[in-house]
Image (tube, rainbow, N blue to C red; front, side, top):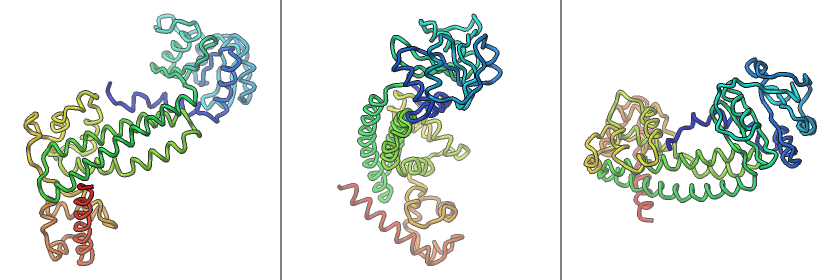
Length: 358
């Protein structure tokens, strides 16, 4: 399966609207507990009004109690696009007959067909199975019980911790090799592979956080703490090593993101995206960083000055062997900042050697 945030973007915007603690979610939970079932459309756009037949034009404020009471009638409920008003109740929805559906129950079939026809959010609550299903365009999502989502989310956090520890090892190893000028393409692709694996787990956790709403705040704090700096380091590794100067680092990142899980396991695929095209043999090639990642670790070094240093010296090794007077000549540096860069590089080198042997 291809990792693709865009595929899920719209349906997860809807999930945030239905997260625990919202009035709409409370109303849905009340209907679920009463086992009455319901068909609810969250849109008052023209496309929806065209498929609504009959019913009562209510046009009142939406409250959980009113939603629950109106769901006792057989017809569909139509809410405003922001779910703050009830527009119609006991309405009949008439989607085009030629629109296909893979669902079996009448309520779910209508919900899926209306969502496909209009592109709007339709919610179906099953009377017998006690589940809430969301339909949006061609997407479908089943809302899970909060306790079940929390269990899955905590398991995902534990997995993230393990993957982050592995990424840290690879990153520390890369730092030490960069100072020794012994980096191979294998070392670079391993770091980018593990960075991408971490970000894919993050995406899974974000889905759970959307579902949990207010219940997911602590989970979000844990995730942000674990992934602090991961994206920035990954981008700087790409800037350090990609060979195709006419392609941006963001494009390289996007190409890696589009790899399937199976393709991501083959490091030669990442090497090819970076511009190393000799297949598996390219992994043994030696390479040198430009210095983006290491220099970004020096405190209070503006990005413009960092770029000037790299444009002047072209590689990390030349920066490491440069004198303070040579650094001083770079635009925007000066003697004080030149000393700060040299001291910062020395401290980071000592730290990377220490971390590598921990």
